[in-house]
Length: 238
Image 1 (cartoon, one colour):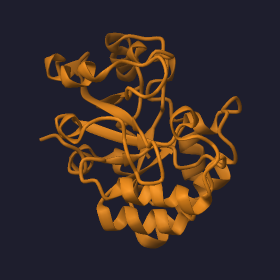
Image 2 (image 1 turned 180 degrees about the vertical axis):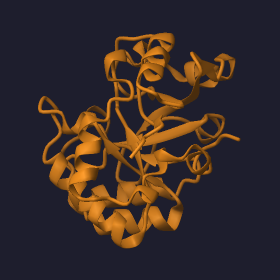
Image 3 (image 1 turned 90 degrees about the horizontal axis):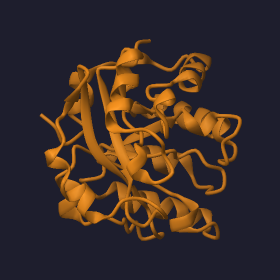
Image 4 (image 1 turned 60 degrees about the vertical axis):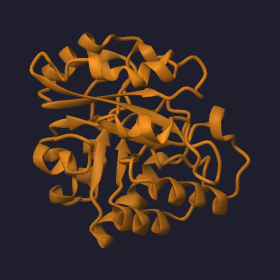
């Protein structure tokens, strides 16, 4: 299986990441990627960039070192109502928008029912393209509802490489990803691959992603990042 795109990565603009746009693009080229999404943390994440950063991304060239750059955001899901921390107009002007739950923005005290409601409400927003790292056992929810809603709304679900690192603070990630992939196979829901790189050495790193896909013999046709023409239909690009 040849993965040609990374739909979730960060530059130093996110505050707790360490490489520039050019460094990330060069690393992606070395890994043989055709496309790299730079999805900085949205404003409510401590230490990240502000609103104007995302409103000015049209000045950034969309190619570097022969790699197609997708300039976007990883917005924070703020509450069980699916509130996110960038305005709709700003999101619609971006190439790609990932929506994720992070403890500093969402908290750790919500119920499973509240957690799935947050995801469902976010997926109803047509300008949200991907649910980022829906694998963290600190935020339990019903995976069948997640997968069925993704199919209904045309939202991609992410297999996040960083989540499965031994050092990750997320809990039960590999088991949760396997549960999600089994349901994605059942309902024929496509998935995307995100390194969630915070340094250039990890751009396009899918070590754990590939292992879990091979382990469960997941259908290649449902891995949307193996085909650029299919992938771009899910995003805000031509």
